[in-house]
Length: 436
Image (cartoon, rainbow, N blue to C red; front, top):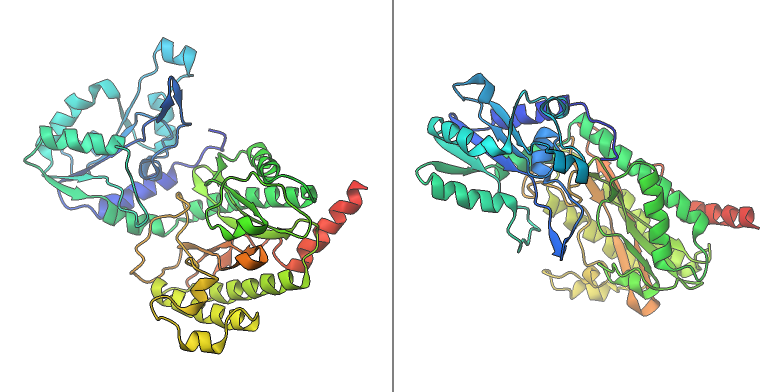
């Protein structure tokens, strides 16, 4: 890993919170992700399963975490199973965590090698009544690949059919949605790295630059600041492409007069940032482009103020829709007649703003959170309104990441990233002067 070590107090605290919500005489088991094959002997870069990372800090494949608060043997109340480093593994891939390093990372004293897991697990299963298993229940999940957790669950239920199996997700959805101060600091670090990337490309963008060159400038800046890489597949969309919500080809040349929409964020220590900014290729917005930009920015600023404890996500989006409707009328894109005759299930503003305004953010870019429950202090939400006008080859989305506070307005973790249209123009103009 490129990131600095994380104090294991965070993971000790997270396990304690999870254990407190477990039923008596229950055990919970979490598996790392697989390393996924591409073809021949090629694999995708390893990405740790976020739940086991949240609870242990272990960022290594073939890892298993057991939490068993009522285990008769005190040493078995928290256990890590890890791959033992062999001479072959050490030479070819580098050594894996030692038991001492695993303790330093996680705060877990009992560490067994993976080859001993079935034997130890048999003893634990004779002592536990219930077993919490980990399934992906995120509201956006669409999993076709069988995960390591899924294979393990299948094996466990066949071998131990008489146990009662419970879901870890309802606990994790609530715990992970409210961030600890240490987590907020890590997300802030990711946001700061994203800022460095954005400031770099302001110096770099000019007519005829290619979208993939901008993407390359971002990743260079991210990696040199110890980021894991992109938090998600980046969108660098100029002109009409900005009206395609999930445009990820990034293969067009940026033409003078166009606006580039960049939805890009760095990941640091597995924690995401999520930023969208729009800049003019030539360094200056047209009058119309600036009108649309400022309309989106006004909606964003007003929407952010609604992120307070007690707000219901669905109600919030209705209110944002009203704000956007007024702006679209002001821009001449909608008429009052359009609004009067709208379908309540698909309001008129959806023609130009068809996605949601906010989502939970954290270890996953679209992080855990139960959307039917009120917002709480410590939750982090994006705010990302947009207006997309294909007929004008113009798409504007502006996005920052906010931490909800107990009282008052939320804290913008991206407040230092240039966002005002005039400031963006000034920074791009001064970059041009330096280059001459």
